[in-house]
Image (cartoon, rainbow, N blue to C red; front, top):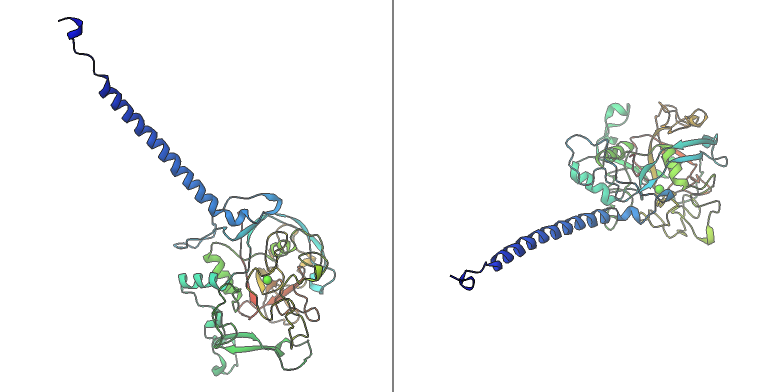
Length: 377
Ligand SMILES: [Ca+2]
């Protein structure tokens, strides 16, 4: 047998198998890269709401883990910073020297950074909480007779306080004239049983007591802000200014918050565009990207209220006094509310100034009071 007759080595099958294996490896590598890119894109999309509202100092922090989640909780957005804005900590002058006596003394306070809801909690958000947990707000519960000694049992029915404008001018030293306890008023029926949330999904939830707001915050893996955190955030970095947006009440002739214009409490001329509540985020945000920190609804804070707290408040991360005292109502323990509401008039409370303080018993719901949450890292 000569060389021409020897069988030639068969290279084609080897080449084919090699090409097939190489192709497979390349396909696996390509798929791996594709999956990684898809995951990264999803992560970026999740953080879009934060990125579109530049945090203080331009720093975007990663989402923190929830630290106070109740055991066994099933909540898809537990501890999520979606719809929140990062407020970098800092030092500021807390209080005001052109307001009420409980805003004094003006004093320097330092707070650590925290996340804060960009808007007041809406009816839609609160409904998710109620649907998930079956929570019943205080206004929906029958008042306990032992909490109201001497009260007519027939009057102990579920309900809440509703702003009811009187027909004519009244003295402004008695708020009971324009507040009425309405049976059947609650967060689903904020002005009484005949009112509803139809078309109001993005309005701030109201008729929520402090306890209700705290329950929502726990469910969401968050908490209510301290009074110092709230004021620091409301000021938006503007040092010792009268309003959240500066010292001018109506820059360029434009109202910057949903408050009361006209003769309080009988006529709101709605010069700012709203006679009652406004959908959350209807006015421009402050310099920290927070909406409605002035006006619309009062917002619950975590702290107990005392008018003299600023005289001995700690300089770093104050959390309020250990107890509550209100000389206007010595027997009632009260929590702090901040930010004012659509009922704030310059001739009455001017409560929409960032330094202004309000107080309310923690079991009380009002048709002009809601809340927002914060989250520490
Ligand atoms: Ca508000």
